[in-house]
Amino acid sequence: MDGGALPTWALYAAALLASAAILRVLLASHRKERPPPPPGPRPWPIVGSLHLIGELPHRSIHELSRKYGPIMQLYLGSQRVVVGSSVEMATEFLKKQDLVFASRPRTAAGKYTTYNYSDIAWAPYGPYWRQARRLCLTELFSAKRLDSYEYIRLEETQRMLARLAGATTGGAAVLLKDHLNLLSLSVISRMTLGKTYIGEEAAMDVVSPEEFKKMLDEFFLLNGVFNIGDMIPWLDFLDLQGYVRRMKALSVKFDAFLDRVLEEHEDRRGRAGPEFVPADMVDVLLQLADDPNLSVKLTRDGVKGFTQQKIYFWSAGHDRRGTETSAVTVEWAMAEILRRPEIFEKAWEELDRVVGRERCVEEKDIPNLPFIESIVKETMRLHPAVPMLVPRYSREDTTVAGYHVPAGTEVLVNVWTIGRDPAVWDSPEEFRPERFEGRSVDVKGHDFELLPFGAGRRMCPGYQLGLKMVQSSLANLLHGFRWRLPEGAAPEDLNMEELFGLTTPKKIPLEVVAELRLASQVYSL
Image: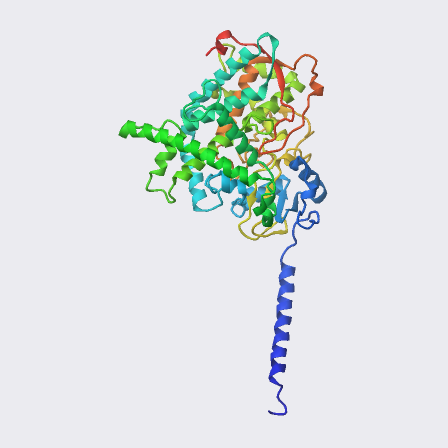
């Protein structure tokens, strides 16, 4: 060996040390370049921030946002969650970086109760979801399609008025949500399935009303629970709460029901031959399944997933925790108006002037009823049926408001907090429909201070139907009856607490007394 040369091991060691130094510099540089994560509470081992979330998660998260700001990071178990609680953050997540946050998290409910994420609500972003959204917008919920079903909505509204007129005879009190739920479920059943499976007019050939109700109750409950396995994946196999077992059992029952529904529709289409005209959404979906031009074939399970989603999205069980989204909004509106009875007088003046007292309110009347629309907007601001929008999921690393949000982060937008932001709304805790008079704020995803249906790519594709149902049913309730609380109940004592689930209904359902105020033929079928 040359006396001046370094040993081989020394050369290797020097190279290794040099590489380590370079790597350290690069990592330090990368750390300096990458923004910090959003502020938030320090997570505990295993449970993360779950110990900070109470029975009303939207309120718990609201309080945390007051401490940590309009963007904050939580850990629900091991799942990183970023929450936006301001107009600016909603705009960032749902508009400016809509595509980055266009996917959905994987959950047990999505896997077991929606045909392995085959419905539009829980499907991850990709070719299947893009096609599903297009079909919803152009086929299932197009303006032309919804107009063709207007007669169903009118007939069921008239049935609701007749039922209420009969139920309140002699000053008897009624639970308003029961009538609202039955209205919504009857409408969506007829629009989707071609018949209703609940109530006095229920079809009994496929499933009994009791069985149908139990399935919907279970479906709604299981899609609104906090499943430990979703938040702590390594505990998933234990199914500690038993929810996955129940999801699997429900999927078997619902699949058998939908199989029979599809067979009925296929038989009817076969008998009609080439003269067949689709009569409901299942007919439309079965035709689309036969379309060879679809970029992603719509399978039979896909048809079932679409059908199931249409049923549960607008309807729900009739227990205290499962209440249909439009029924939730209308019940809250009536509760708030009962606390400010002068609103009745203003609404009646508008309704009598535009509609008169010889007929019920029709959808064509709504554009001429701006005060009714203001009541709806104010209710959706103060009592959003879904207080935190359905969670989104980041598809790639990004930066939001100067903070690093990595791929695989779940994102929540707390519209409940936005609706109470004093920087946006004067006296935000007060119910004041007049605040919307003369303002162009809408609920269609354009104005980020009012987002009951979301915004951007993942906005509710059926929001037009939901809006029609809320406006029409509220207008007809106000037009058709004079309302008061039962004897001995004072408006100021009305309980205004909510429950949390897929929707946030009143904790104590609204019990009311109604007196007829229109011509008798309005309440006749």
